[in-house]
Length: 97
Image: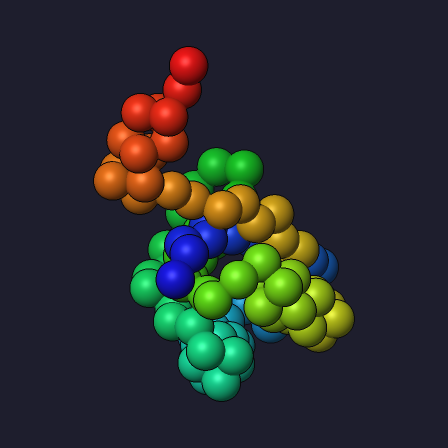
């Protein structure tokens, strides 16, 4: 499975209901599991983003669906990137001309 990092910002609605964030994360984890993936970890962070969420998913389409479904709830906005492990990075770089 591929790894994805989501950089999350709370919306005005999301920050007003910040106390519900652990429950929302539990619901997200359940949705990821149903979609065939795994929530690897989530971090409350300082700086530009409020949370960083790391998931594994079977493909980009699953991640897009999860991201859209999550955003539709109105609590967060996300930027999601595919993350390559150290092993994957080494393999990619080894294929360079």
